[in-house]
Length: 147
Image 1: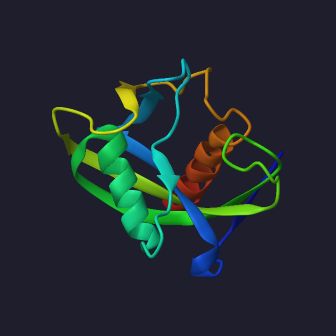
Image 2: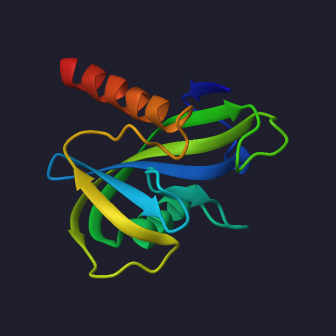
């Protein structure tokens, strides 16, 4: 499994939006009803949907976020077979960063729980992908702070 990062790519090639979400400095992660692992909010782009709208929709559906700011971080790609990419061909997504101010009371998605935690979990749903997305987010965040 290879994960690569890019500044941009043709919009029509973006299939996923994944969001590194924070709430008052803590990590916001999701637990799917059918799994015992944790994941960043995110998901598939709907036909004709702008990728930023995908990110907003997925963040709201999977975390119950009501008030938040969100911005793109970078494009990422995954090469290799996984649960959402049976072919193993290079598949592209947009990585976003969100700061959530307020949550809705209930979830309307496949997620059963939202975790707001200080430390990242050891049990990831996509252990070969999502920790690398967080690492890239942190690297870029730290580069901005140094400027």
